[in-house]
Amino acid sequence: MSLFDWFANRKKSNSPISRERQEREIADGLWTKCEACGVVAYTKDLKANQMVCRDCGHHIRIYSNDRIRQLIDNNTWIAMDEGVRPTDPLQFRDRKTYRDRLRDTQEKTNLVDAVNTGIGLLEGERIALGVMDFRFMGGSMGSVVGEKLTRVIERGTLERLPVIIVCASGGARMQEGMLSLMQMAKISAALERHREARLLYIPVLTHPTTGGVTASFAMLGDIILAEPKATIGFAGKRVIEQTLREKLPEGFQTSEYLLQHGFVDAIVPRTNLKSTLAQLIRLHRPQPTHSTSHHVSLSGVINVGTERYAPVSPE
Image (cartoon, rainbow, N blue to C red; front, side):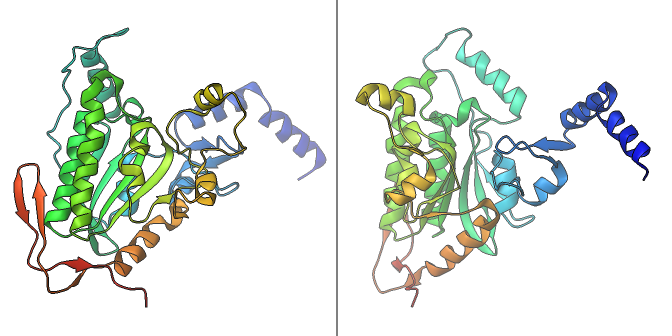
């Protein structure tokens, strides 16, 4: 290429038409700009790397359908409770009614509510899985989220399955008031019965995991995993600083800070998450002993067998 051709191409690439074409390609989804480092990458390549930037390692936000595809083996996903739909028990209204907000969000996201649950295989290991979706009203926890997570946990207890919940939430859903807060106790009670059956529960904390979700099932895992640089906490950083009237440490409420202070057990990049979960499940696969265990559900007693299960020792 001659020097003249180089300058001509450079001038052409900086032309308004070229910039307009680039913006159109980004808008059409062919390219994705990393919000951390600003590098523009081919979306197909990003998806092949599970939406993790190859330049800086930033984990671009993904949603429940993507998570299920990444974690569950092909053609093994069986969705649960897809017909459970939210209502408006408090007749809540601010700028618009809660019922209208629900309808608009459902149409925009093609979701019924902020969580998908089901049963599937993860590297051949059968699991009960719940995946929260931040698109639906900030992943807020309402009655449907609480009910669906409770049901999938109870299903896991009944069938002696490990339970994995991928958390992504702004906390309790204010439009449902106390009914939303009740879900914290309901899910926690289901997890306690799962624990009494000596079965494995792993929450995966993604960006962001805050509020009532953090104050309940997100922190009740036998092993708590988190994605890199995820925001994890209860109240917001500014609220805490205003309350304490002091500056918080650098990196406060990040997964790295929580790992350093013992609140999470490991930070796992998204590209390694499936293999890590599979390894943990195999290490803690139930082994029979000679005792009897029962599981009590909200609807009565569910017998989970005549054998109590205990984790496999790594040795």
